[in-house]
Amino acid sequence: MPKTHSEIFAANTVVFPLTVVALAIAVLIGDGCCAFVSLCLGRGEQEKAHRSIGNAVLLCIGASIVLTVIYLVFRDGILTMFGGRVNEETFRYSQEYFFYIALGIPFYMFGQAMNPIIRSDGSPGFAMVSTLAGAVVNIILDPVFIFGFHWGMMGAAVATVIGQILTAVLSVWYLCHMKAIRLEKRSFFISGSLIRKFLPLGLCSLLSQISLVASMAASNNMIQKYGALDPIFGQPQYAQIPMAVVGIVMKFFRIVISIAVGLAAGCIPIVGYNIGAGRKDRAKKLFTYLLLAEAAVGAVATLIAELLPMQLISIFGAANESSYYTEFAVRAFRIYLCLTIFACVSKGTFIFLQSLGKAAASTLLSVVREMVFGVGFALLLPVFFGLDGVLYSMPVSDLLTFLSGAVLIVLTYRELDGKRAGKRALEEQI
Image (cartoon, rainbow, N blue to C red; front, side, top):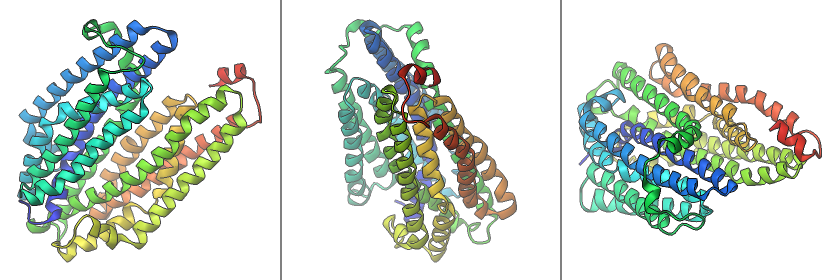
């Protein structure tokens, strides 16, 4: 069992991007099928709708099995690629954690792929409950397995997989009781033409997730490289600290971004309704409120990170850690999250653009954020600033993404300018 929390978090930080790879494939299938099913239902093409879902199920199962085999066969090489060799302890814990996580990949991918499909059947509430149920079970079982049974990293992984299994089981139950679509035996006959139709519709989701993986891989490798050159973190007993701390900071950041995404996602049906009704003035007003709300969320998160870093660190357990851990964690929270307000506003803008039918522009900016700015600055800044350069890569990327997105904000306001417009004119513009 790991001696400190930093060893657990370091291993988790190494493995996390590999779960995002699985998520990327799942959303490629799920989001693509969801969009295609919605189109089919709108046209009254029930046959294509139920067959596309059956094909999505088979494709997801097949892809998840292939990915699991790849992960298990090439485990050590993959972990090394994602910065797992900061020290021997971290690598060993990463191996243990990743083994069980890899075994759960089929359940994880199935649950994530079916989630948007369940929403397309008119049950967003069930989709949310199935995801939350898995997360709650994971949270409850984590301390039981880790501290009660003394299973260490294995306990954390097994708790995660059990939560994923629950989500997958609930998804299977729903597929057997769908409202608008009834799956039949022939739904599960493979159709290459159907797969070729719905997969491209999920490409935007795939690119967004894969670009995030590239950014995390770059950061992890730079942490490993420049941490080894640091006079303190170059020592084996402290080598895992930077990797663990960055993982913790990213957990907090993802919570904040989830709130930002929730605010923006809630606007999508309202925007669609008002645009369809020719009320661009209302859509414009909603866009203003959204930007203000996103800025408020980002500002609060930034203040918490800047003023209360010690309290945040204690939430993730710092009782058995060295003073080096605490000092670096405080610095990381304050640097990494200093421009979170820009990240929230950018995320809200991207999702709002999707609701206006501008998914290509939104996806392009998301990919630029991670692949160009995220990867680029994670590789460049450490050359000049050492380990701190990895920390500064985040706010610099957020600032440049915001400046790039500001152009789209101005253009969106211009497009939404005017109190009323006929439906026909709007449809031609969007």
